[in-house]
Image (cartoon, rainbow, N blue to C red):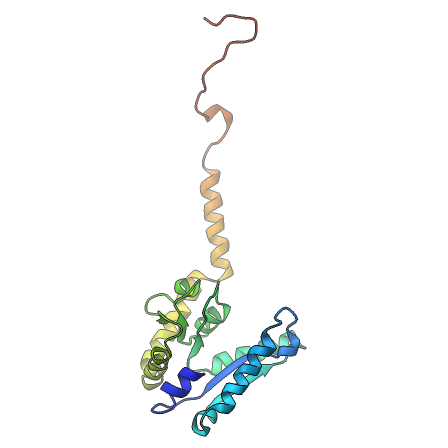
Length: 202
């Protein structure tokens, strides 16, 4: 939020939407309410010009299908998707955005490094570098052709690497390779012979 307010709003177009689940609907995230409260306080402290272009959105979780439809609509309507994590395993938001043909700006941490391959989005070496984030956003907003090119490359990369069918086929090839190896006892390397008890070996 601060990166957008300080480095995009003063000289660039666009709006920022920070979207997440309704804090009352996530039982396994006790810090969620505190984080949202902190974001709300920071948003209220912003200058009015920035505040009018930054939206804090919480999505209800009462109906899972309804929630999925809202997330899908937000991602498809976005010009850019950002995942500025300090730590991350596999960033589902990253792959979802890439699959929908959107350029993703992500932190170069954890699994995101593998997800955003060269030419499919923008990786930020330092997630705390707010100026670099702002520059990346302004670059893509000012160059729709580049944003489209990255989005198309991102979609292709997810199709070739992260769909469930792809993983199933790779597992099948691996198992097929292993099945060709003969591991039966007759093909094991010989071991030294030992004498039977009570008999002398010759």
